[in-house]
Amino acid sequence: MRICDPEQLAAMVPDGATVAVPPSRSGAAMVVTRALISCGVRDLHLIAIPTSGIQADMLIGAGCVGVMEAAGVTLDEFGQAPAFVSAVRAGTIRLKDSTCPALVSALQAGEKGIPFLPMRGLIGSDLLEHRPDYRVIDNPMADGGDPIVLLPAIRPDFALFHAPLADRSGNVWIGSARELMTMAHASMATLVTVERFTDTDLMADPVRASGTIPALYVSAVAEATLGAWPLGLDGVYEPDTTALAAYAAGGAIWQTPASE
Image (cartoon, rainbow, N blue to C red; front, side, top):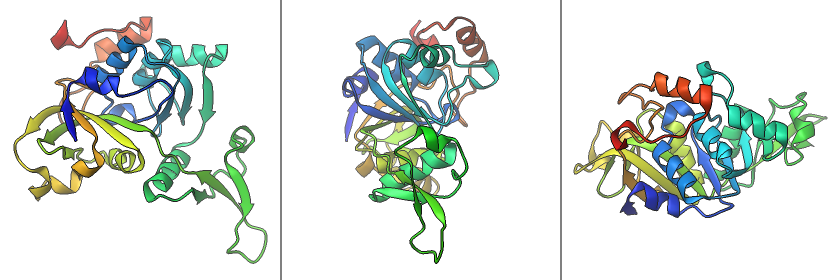
């Protein structure tokens, strides 16, 4: 595990990498998002677990994304994600549409090291017409015809997220945002920004240990106060609704208040 700064985290992500990001409510690493834009990364395959918002929209608007795989990309109460909508309409990104359960299930397959996971809920959906990698077979455990969908495992090159706390060994406390644990388990490398470091061993803390990703699954950590801004971080700070509304109105890219 390496301790570095957000710009060094961004430099670890090469063009064409597959990057898993969490929903806006669960700790989007916005400071690294701006660093990725600044360093000019291109052709990312961005996978939302299972949705994304301003993080994906900024990367798309800056020309960093080649493929967007998600169950949805919106600015929530602030409306549509403008760069995402424009890119889909113009055909400048490839959209791999999915559903929340399908993305989580496919990530769980990656976490378990298995090639696919069966799921029944997509049967009857026109999504199957647009996702040839979602294969329908007859359930081999049934006596008669019983179709079921096989979802290919998702094994991202990188998981990227922001969390409240890490210790000096690289253990990262995520609290109740359990999707971050699955992302770290399934990905080849995990890049994390945190609000602060603690000298306490989080894995030895009986209160925090169950919500802590062990350093074994963490590749690099950077300290970044307000690292999720303008999004919020559960239990730490609320979203900056003024900044989010301004983005929705004009699509500007800006620095955090602390760096202005």
